[in-house]
Length: 418
Image 1: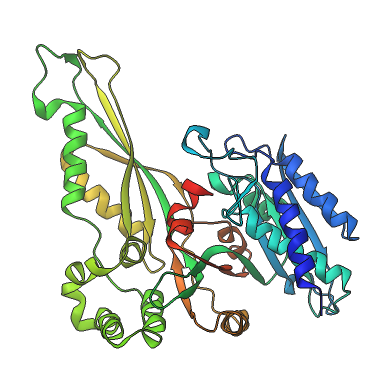
Image 2: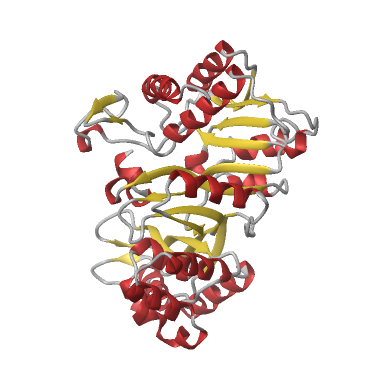
């Protein structure tokens, strides 16, 4: 057996150095960090290929070949190099200092997701050094640009270098262990919500604020009316097939009272009462019960005493796998049309489908042996990550950070703390 303690110690030192690369996106600047990973792989005799979608926007691919000799059968270990911005004034440590405190390495990207990237890197190093015989290829893929939609990273590789990343299964982020859940759980994401970024735009008569146009002809009033109408008609709550699977998996390991509650949630007879029943769920679980529409930007006006002639808002919409995107958009248009507000989709991805291949049983067995006290729970990721690009290449993708986190370090606060 490999010396796992030595592997772990090495991984900590690799991560410490990796966290010190400032790969804040925008602008990204992932090239130097990608070259560092390539150097680490090279020391173990693993050749890495670097591909850049633009100057500095570099992704890395390294492949260990198996005996089958079929590239498309590979298992891809997918992670991203870029991180979200970090305001040093909001941190008690240097976000890119990789300081060790209380047994943890602190730095932007430690959880999202340089930490998992290094775990996958350590796997590649161990497989190569121990000369582990592989039936199928294992591919390490570290990409740029995930935090800004992935089009210059995983999307670029899928478009321009599909053969380089050819695989049938992908392991990435999207699910993780929750130690403080009752029962503790390891969530494995089999799908993600599709995304629509929608721009609402209203036009009206401009004028001086001292003698304003009629309220019905003011752009801001029209926009606010449309937003209020959308708020009065939120997306319907429902338990989709994948989320029902999540609740039933949790119920099997839950105390009696919680088990009965989850069973009631899954009952078709309870659908009219979901708004009331769902109040007991944490925010992340509630987000799985509906499409989500969130106002993220409002743009209007240019001077304090001028009534503007236009106003706009951006909606971040996340759609369940079984939602018809066209019908969803048509519903928004119906609600805002009486206010003279137009609707434009600025960004969209395809519905994800649900991955449920043979690898899922292998993951469940491995996680159950490693964490026998935790429930292994297939689930839906409420966000989007890079596997969407691999699913377009017909690969199954599973989101699983195979560690147990407490509430303070979970997905909900990953962009705040790490």
